[in-house]
Amino acid sequence: MNSTVHKNIYKTVLEVLSHGQLSHKRLIEESVKRLYGGIDTTGEVGEFTEIRGLIGSVIAEMKSDGVILYDSGSYSVGADGPIPLRLERCEKEIISLISKTPMNKAELRSHLRRIFKTDTTPSESDDRILYNYMGQILRRLTDTGVISLAEGLYTLKAETNADVGVIEEMAKLKAEYLTRLHRKGGEFFEHYILTLLKKNEEAHGKTLTECRTTGGTMDGGVDGMIKTVDYLGFRETVLIQAKNRTDMTSETTVRGFLGAVYASGGDKGIFATTSDFHPAAKLFLSSVNNLVGINGEDIFKLACKYLYGIKKKSGKLVINNKIL
Image 1 (spheres, one colour):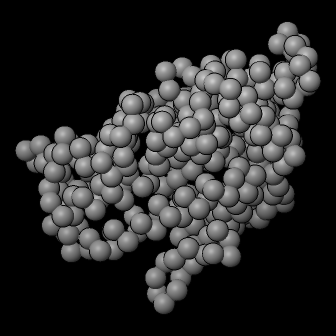
Image 2 (cartoon, rainbow, N blue to C red; image 1 turned 90 degrees about the horizontal axis):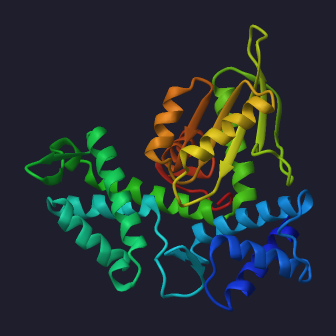
């Protein structure tokens, strides 16, 4: 999708919603009509089917950015709807809270609601998202040994406590990094993740014969392609889908991309998202051999490893402002 098309759709969606709340279907229909001078295109196929798909993609982006709000089956514009949340910011706040004093889930929920101000909105959807994120983060931090759970209280482990300053600093850096990356938009992210993956392939001894974004409105769900050859001469085509989102990626979306990998003749697929994958999507990813998913956490680690978007300054990792 080129920038002009994106801009026109973006503006149109806001104009349509300025007249009131609409369901997803109605929002797309009204946006198509406005873009095409009032022509009813709901029954058409071909070009208008593609246009509706592009509008749906922009709507998802605007929802993810918090520009438009979704609650109780309708989209709206305004400050009275759900508050947009970011997974990595929730992690930063949870680590900060637990580092001060052990807390149970109810206490963490109460503190997080006040911090993110979800207790000030009439919507319950932002609370549900917040609790979902909290659960994911607590499970991961427990599994990785950063925190422990005993008698219903979450606390930093003794060995972690000694490095709590470093852990908090890295959580803050990750939150800032992913926020900046998200703000750069989808097109930037496609090029950015392709460069990171290129560096990763080269670090593993492979020679790149092709590395490019596929782009366009008919990319079939494939945003990038990397072709490599190893020292024995084995060739491989890796296809990439890049989603610059804050909401979780569903199993259905991941399955759809795997179908696109097969249809496009790829050997492997990489699904990259700045957020995370739904538990069902993670389970599916673990069940297939030729598709991997990398989330915001993984992307941050790659950026730190290959110093792209992140740089070292006086021995510390910081944001590279020239890139982000």
